[in-house]
Length: 45
Image (tube, rainbow, N blue to C red; front, side):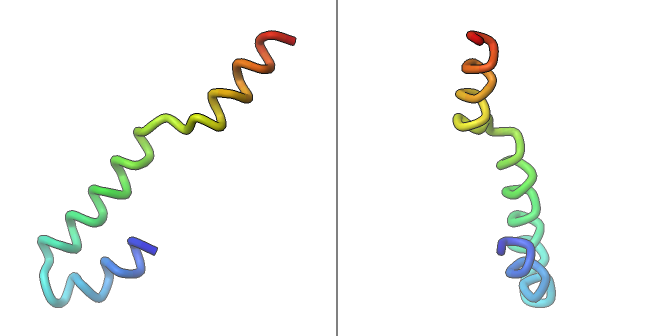
């Protein structure tokens, strides 16, 4: 959804558009708690 918003915003304000792309990239760095729970559960088994 952020990418779809960033594309038209690039024509209005490239800075805001770039900020949205950076925001999405930073979201990938945040650990997902659901995945961590599954991994811990598998280690216990």
